[in-house]
Image 1: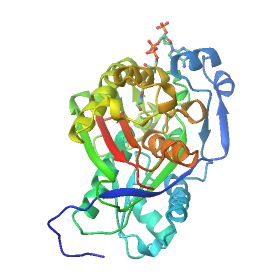
Image 2: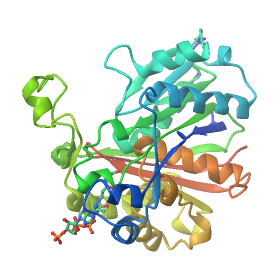
Image 3: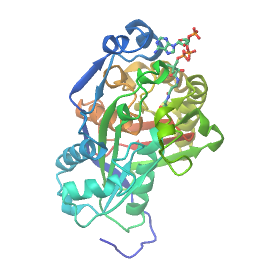
Length: 336
Ligand code: UT7
């Protein structure tokens, strides 16, 4: 539903959350039978113990639809009320149509506009920032943001540098106007395209369309320079969080709860040190799910909220980084 643009920006917040994880669990021991790795190496270098894997028939829209249904239920609204669906994903069902249109059909959200957004592990934050603008300006009342990833389908299972890190999952959030002063207090988004080579899928797009050759060379799988991404991540998690706090007129001492992108416990530890946060204020679930790219933050946020760790009025910081390179952070005064 499109209203006339209002001049005063409305406060916008998350009023419902949902997540969905596929059933199959892949343990570190399972992986050590496929590549030259060990439970000990994976746990000490990353903090990951197991991850989820979608079924052969499951695509991003299947996981995303289930997460969205849970978020709708949590918010107590029907699919007909959604004005816009934004899906953050790097593993869309296909190039055309968009995964957001498939989810729109699955939900029966017949009044919703829909588009996909590609910002890798920062995708949920980019999508929250994008979606909240439509509500703040008065154009829309209800936006569904979904982050859904089926990374196990773009992993080279012969590459131990990457195959131990990633997992599948989806998270969703319903955005609506909230009481003034609550909801999103700030966003800080950034990108550095000069680091694009550090994480990529070389073939299958318009640069190198799929061919017998690209398939033979396994160029449809993700490649990563882990060391460079690690260095970038350690710097950017703290920087982006502090930038977002400053934009909100707050400092690191005001943070009640921190939900970081779940890539590596060593990266999260360095951000915690930088922000002076104790472990009770930080949500970590990457031991169970690995890195689910854009889905990591909404799944973690959903678990933290449902687990009673985030209360009305808490100052919550979300922060992520990923391929692109991209990064994003948001400060939220929790409304629900
Ligand atoms: O969402 C963003 C996505 N990406 C990331 O967040 C990744 C960021 N990077 C990282 O988390 C870390 O760099 C990794 C976990 C990927 C790697 O940890 P590291 O401490 O940087 O290890 P490394 O790359 O320096 O490798 C150390 C050794 C190497 O052996 P040599 O050369 O010292 O003999 C690797 O070949 O560990 C070896 N290695 C492995 N050994 C067992 C690399 N992967 C594995 C493995 N199992 N799976």
